[in-house]
Image (cartoon, rainbow, N blue to C red):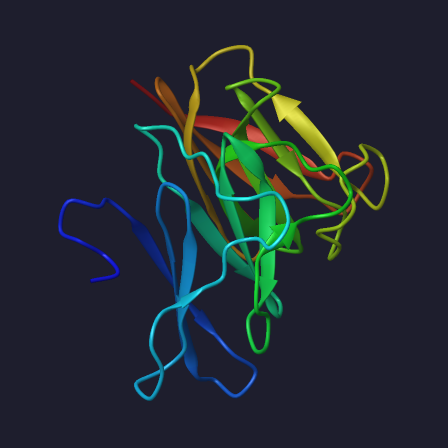
Length: 188
């Protein structure tokens, strides 16, 4: 079988442009796609760079931004695939950081707990997941001096939540040079 019961994996459901469902899974060394009842699981692991090297205690995280599904884990570069017709994941251009968590926050793809800092969140350019240079198209980062490691993210149309080991923060998208605003809303 493709997924023996001893294999831990994370799955994600995406929508195609025709509103069909595509299911993606991430395992220790492979990414797979299931596109419907008439098909079977396809290996959509990157074609360049070999198998992935997921750490023992980590899981893949996924998010859909427009026509693309993004997959992240701290060991390998951020990956993306076009939902409708993509055949293999590939590293995202623009030098995004490696990260454990991912979410769509309004017009931004956001990564958390990065290889730069476990307390950092970083977001791409506005509506441009290929732009990660700070200060370009509103791309930027925030490292929190307190609250502990980033342990998860969730996004909404105008903001989202950042879950840290010792607190929860609310983020709000602004319409000025600050781009994002962060408020501590719950402490452990």
